[in-house]
Image 1: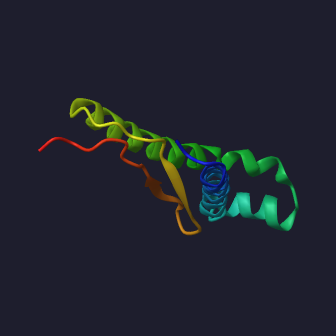
Image 2 (image 1 turned 180 degrees about the vertical axis):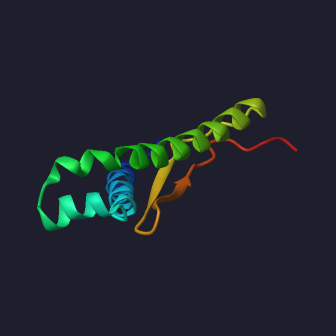
Length: 106
């Protein structure tokens, strides 16, 4: 079982990963000239939801990857802890650290 400090760090890392992933989606969509003109030059934030597909796509890929770990662990009867995402300024989420709660038999 995780102590309060570990849980707090995991929560902070999760929030940071969500924020950096949103920032990544925003910056990737900012390459669209119409979006850039609207948001940056005209200060119109109503165009910001246009970056949601990128944001949710990156989150979905990360989540599906982690589901794959849980499926493989279940197949080999290995217990896993909750994954802790690692934020990245470059691509939003660098990945996750998933602790082993039991080890595979040899």
